[in-house]
Amino acid sequence: MRELIQRLEQTQDLNRNKIELIKNNWAKQQNIQAPLNSDIYNSMTDEQRIKFRDLLTTKPTRTLSGVSVIAIMTKPAGCIGRCTYCPTSELAPKSYTGYEPSSMRARRNNFDSYLIVKNRLEQLKKVGHPTDKNEVIIQGGTFTWMPWDYQYNFIKRTYDAFNNIDAKDLEDAKIINETADHRVVALVIETRPDWCKDEHIQKMLELGATRCELGLQSVYDYVLDKIKRGHNLDEAKRAIRELKDAGFKVDLHMMLGLPGSSKELDIDMFRILFEDQDLRPECGVIKGSELYNIWKAGDYEPINDGYILDVLEKIKPKYIPPYVRIKRIMRDIPSDHIEAGYKYLNIRQMLADKGVQCRCIRCREIGHKEVESVKPELNIIEYNASNGKEYFISFDDKQSDSIIGFARLRLPEDTKHAFIRELHVYGQAIPLGESGEVQHKGLGKRLLAKAEQIAKDAGRDEVLVLSGVGVKEYYRKLGYTSKGHYMSKSVEA
Image 1 (tube, rainbow, N blue to C red):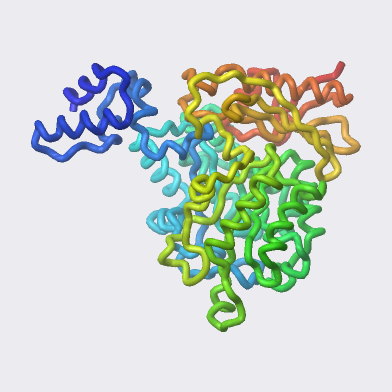
Image 2 (image 1 turned 30 degrees about the vertical axis):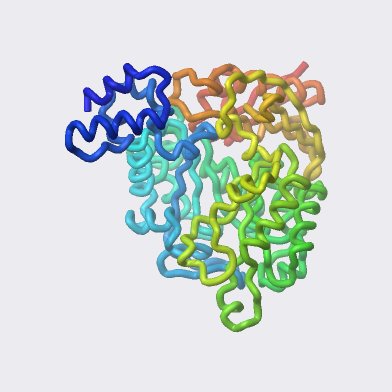
């Protein structure tokens, strides 16, 4: 292996294709099977790993947004909801089939959050991904409905796994993680609007959550009623407002092809979603419906891939604002476990092949594009949302139509503080302390400073950040101090 690594180091203008040729030729000479890129990477010195990481890392899109994403699934359990579309399985929590990659990983580890995290960290390390900055997504439907003792212990065990220490309690685990080798920079919790009231939001804050994925599904009350969702649109608007006013980032989970809807109504749903100031989420998750029992009874015609493509082809260029990130389209359910309806799970790639131009954040991230040189330009989008003023402050490269980084500033009504709800610089994830092509170039500090200035000019005297526990040290270096669940900085004139 040492000889192979030496050949790679001596090759001019090395790229992935050249690596494949070199390792295949070397393996043929040795009369052995060509090694995996992860085997080569794990045989390198630390210095060599830094040099070759981008070329040898498999599945690079998993860290192109600057962090490694780790999904952890809760134990199989019921749900307070009785939604007609929701799959039920003894192998996974309600709303999952048990055959998603995350479900199967959880089953192998007995749904123990500690073991799941340890397993995932090891997998990511083997394929060359840095794991010092991690976004943790808690999957399992209505997490806030589960008993508090379960929530508390599940999240504590999660932090313990990242810390490699069994902390005395959750608060201790969070403090340890602030300077741990594997830090939790974001924690995402899934729930429903009717289980996202102030009492639940306070608990999410205690757990260290920074983002909430809220299941709305439809903007039409008659559709919500038909699918027995158990809440209406006004309930969702209240939850969105309260989350934003607590500093959370808000993802909305939407579904296409529900009973009572149509292709035209689904398209118009996204116009409503971003024109109604009481909605306007930062992120969206779009999926098709799974009404298995109704379909079996002959009372429902499931949507197909053509339906989904038609809807997305119309809404992405027309209705999705540039401050929104379409986080996920469809779900990781293997196509052989989908009884009827949509089966293509690479919808985003299919849209790109059709030439659909979308300006959502996900489609413009600098890490997803091959850009030779970057010229950051500062842009600000101002809009009203959920009874507050929002500022989307971004650095963009105009020539490639790429977004390099952004901050979300919220000025809630009737308060003297402002919230920086998100700060993100894109690019391949790199270990803390190293300097990469896009990250760690001071853009985050400049975005933060601009947000602070806007807050100050608006007469606010304090900026609050709902920071992931693993990012608190970053904010401390920039003059922020801990204040309850937040990081705080005075910006008085």
